[in-house]
Image 1 (cartoon, rainbow, N blue to C red):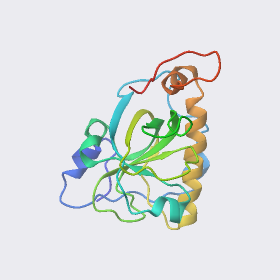
Image 2 (cartoon, rainbow, N blue to C red):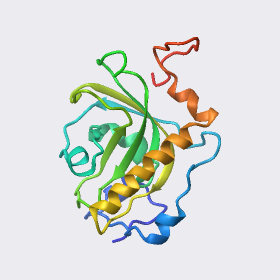
Image 3 (cartoon, rainbow, N blue to C red):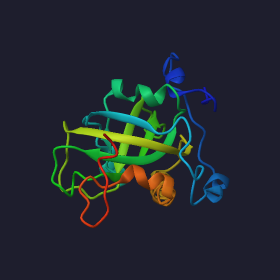
Length: 201
């Protein structure tokens, strides 16, 4: 069964079997935009998610060069109930780390079944765009999802998937550079004359 465009991830999760996704095409690759979404944050965003970082299968870092932090199943309902499977962008923060590591960082997030790996359950996997010195399993993480990048797709090769992941990261950073999105990434410990509180809290 192919994912229906207007069905939420929660609706699809209730089906008796894992939904399939369309394969990524060359036409899709060529059609990708540098910036996605409107210039202001619009409903259903922002969506706030939080929970202790779960240990996943370890494929993101090992296979794809894109380590991810998994949220607990019960913490993704605020998003899965209103959003379709796909790739999203925003900011994330992990607590209990050093000042630098614990800052608010840009992130990309996959909501879905990772069809390339044929996952059987819905997951929310966040890649925080920061080079962390160590893993942070068990630490509390909060994320704010601000927009949609693309639908969940299947791939005929790992190389094609990695290419799209790298494009997702670039699109996220460019999309977050707009003023309406920047305010959600205010540094909780500013080192210059800027002011601001922890936006994610």
